[in-house]
Image (cartoon, rainbow, N blue to C red; front, side):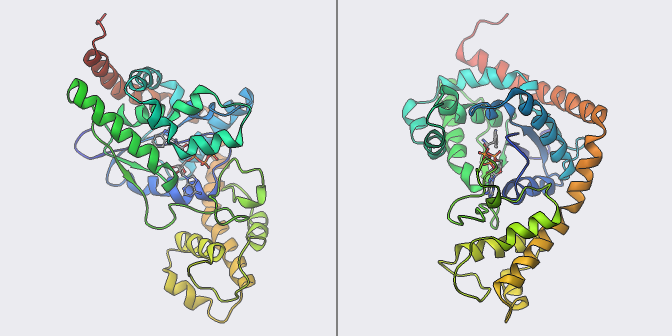
Length: 331
Ligand code: ATP
Ligand code: LTN
């Protein structure tokens, strides 16, 4: 598997994917399959850092897996699996936690944001979650990790942990690089264009979920918060319109210039409807494929079983190596 570079990424099954997840992460994952050995994971162990209903989590995990395939991840070409099916993740997590400093974890902005959001459940898992994520990446000797910009800090920590471990115990892990797309690395909320679109946002109008129907998608875009200007152009201080231009560009492949020309003389109202239509049309094949896959649970089970076997085979070698390096007596 080492002839091509290795890519790993993950997504939490905390709800249906948003347009942010799709543009910032999963749509790139599809393209990268052409040139890399790709490993994609449903990060259900990460999901329990915030309270989850067990039945819903189980269902959402299967749905997320089906969505991954519906978005174009090919389980024959790439490895697509569910994190908890490979016990190596929990094992490496512990070893790496002992090479991570409390101070480093305290600086993670996502920890601060999530603990403010859930003040009644600031659990140790939420705090140490970037270590689990570092393990996800290092287990597969990954070269590149395609993520949205919100994960950049966690990626830097994973690199630091890997470098420190290698220095302390000798070469063990490949040092991974982040792969962050130039356009669309941070799709913003439709209701507050200064904060990122997030699956777990309480206001459903702030998010486009990729399985939503055309009318809902257009309605949400019509309600998107913009500014008092009327001209469709990308400019500083126009966060709402900049976000819509970015989204339109990502789903149509048009440049910002082309978009500004297309909507020259037209108002925000026309533009919002065009964005809604383009997004919905772009996502229609994903919706259809998802519906089809969800009627074929045996196929999904077969895919995630094989995915887990392939993932474990690679990960086991890395954990065994790390166990040996830290001095665990071999059985
Ligand atoms: P949650 O709200 O539960 O924290 P999330 O929507 O942030 O979830 P994750 O599962 O944490 O989604 O992220 C999956 C991938 O999607 C990551 O690579 C992340 O960087 C990317 N991503 C998430 N939100 C956005 C966004 N608004 N714009 C671009 N990329 C995003
Ligand atoms: N932490 C990420 C999801 C995630 C991930 C990973 C991304 C879990 N493990 C490994 C890249 C590599 C998130 O919450 N967005």
